[in-house]
Length: 119
Length: 110
Image 1 (spheres, one colour):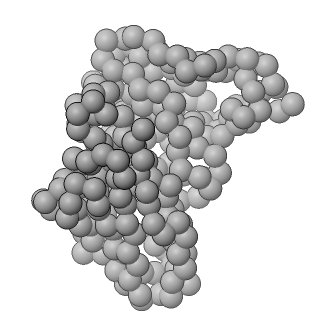
Image 2 (image 1 turned 90 degrees about the vertical axis):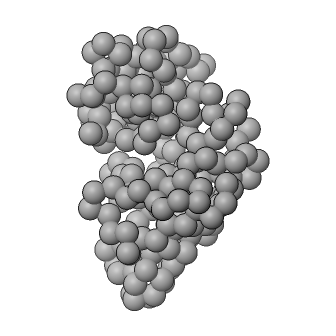
């Protein structure tokens, strides 16, 4: 199957610090990765779309200077929350789409999610 | 454009059936269904592509009416393990972004 690993699963940081979340496709090449944010009892809201080697496309209302996305290789994308504040506390989830036979249906493969708590 | 799900919540007794609907104001390429348990990542159930073919995963099935831009998820003879929040996600084009509905919270009681 297609496995997406996300790390760390939980992180607690102080206000004003930066946090990096990694998303890796373990057994396939991810042509596109999507980053979502989910607040308690709410839906998954798309933050940005990233393609390997190019700049991420951010959704309206998402600050690109605050949420830095890097998709340096076909198996790794990172989300850095810069100068984190308590309101950034949320569940961040990445997902990846694959090429080849894994990508035929268009299924997205989700990571396990990262719960960020900013004190 | 976020798809709209209904109902927002449903409570079932074990063995009962339920239907969750998902509708969009935009033409759709595909509809994806996920179930999420509290504190966990969403789990993929099935994907429906343009063409209206009904899909099935064990006792859960789904249909996609592309003309009406609607999809329905059918849970038959519900089990306790079916409890969770169900999300539909829609794509307007192949390879496009997946936008999720607001979710339907399903509780199955013994």
